[in-house]
Length: 154
Image 1 (cartoon, rainbow, N blue to C red):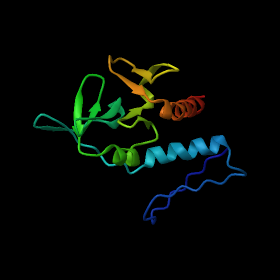
Image 2: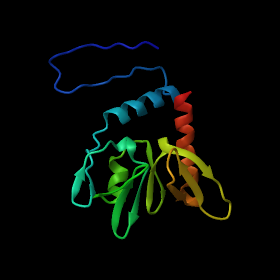
Image 3: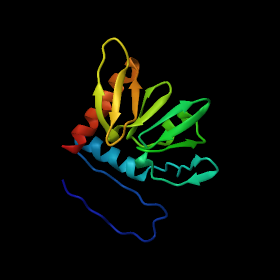
């Protein structure tokens, strides 16, 4: 594979053109990385008490509904956001996936999944005591996302 970068000062907007014989898994991974990097996800504001915080989305372990509001959890803190879960699903990068009706998590922070055949599966995060449950309905979606990430890293 070769990569060519051409500078054109008269462009109004940057563009990326990929030429390939066929669309295989490597091309799809490249496309997804480009989409993740260039996504126009809004900069989210996080609220706690009377303060507004600006933290990196990458620090977020998961978002969950709690008493008619959406909480964003980092390893050590909980912030409020002024979005609904379905709105977050639309704007967050490919690293986030819904795992229940009330939770969206960042797959990059998953440390382990305790699988249960009879009930929800428990996700634990790196360097945090926090945990979330994955419903049986969303478990396969999460496993597929983790497999994509594993394939991308290799």
